[in-house]
Image (cartoon, rainbow, N blue to C red; front, side):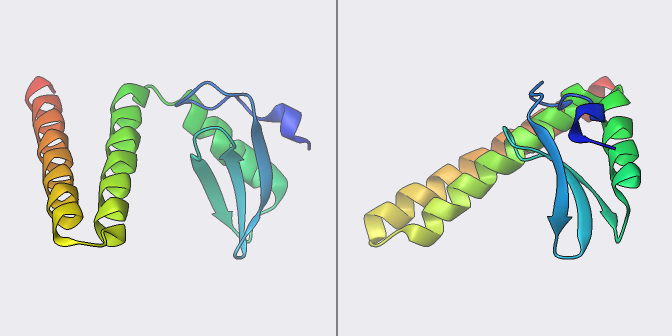
Length: 114
C-alpha cells in the first residue's frame, strides 16, 4: 500500500500525508498541520485504515477547534518557558491565561449546544 491511498487531512485538507515509524508506532501524519493517527507496531495497511477512519468522521469542526486551541496553548506555554525576564514572563502568563479562558469558553458553548 502506498501513501496515495491515504485520504486528505480531515483538519487542514492537505494531501501531503505520509506513513512512517515514530518510536515504535506506525503512523500516518499530515505534513501541513501535524495531525497523526498511530497504530502500535502496526502494518502500513492498519495505519492507513486508521487514518482513513479519522478522515471519515463527522465531528471535524469540534476536533479542529480542539487542535487549534491545543496549538495556541502550546505556543503560549512555550513563550512562558522561553521568557527571560519578569516582563516577558508576565506577558506570557497573561497570554496563556487568555488562551485557557478562550478554550473554556469555546468548549462550554459546544456542550451547551449539544
